[in-house]
Image (cartoon, rainbow, N blue to C red; front, side):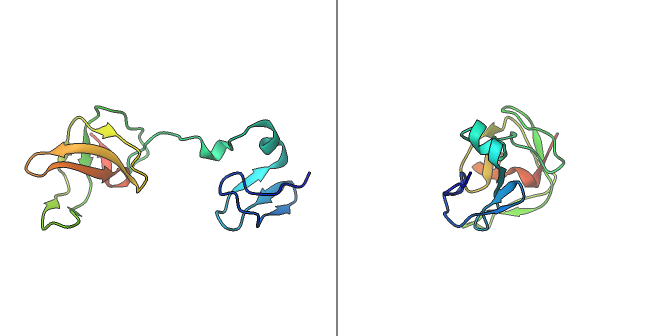
Length: 118
């Protein structure tokens, strides 16, 4: 069966390599049977938000910032070792997937790759 477009980015620039279909624009790979069986590829199913060590994070968890983070548009810095309590997981779309409040700084968004679970 010949597919017309990538199921992830809908590019028409795709090719087949053995039993895999490959999209060079978004690097998505899928098998013929997987595309026929499910409307969304398994690679798009979210695995949850994970910290820098690979631990799964949930709403209400406490995390520790692992390095100094400059706040864009400000002279303030979130110091490494700062403990943040009661996080909320969000899907901001720009990589900032944790919403929280830090004493002295207020409400900010953090990337999960710069925190570890406390």
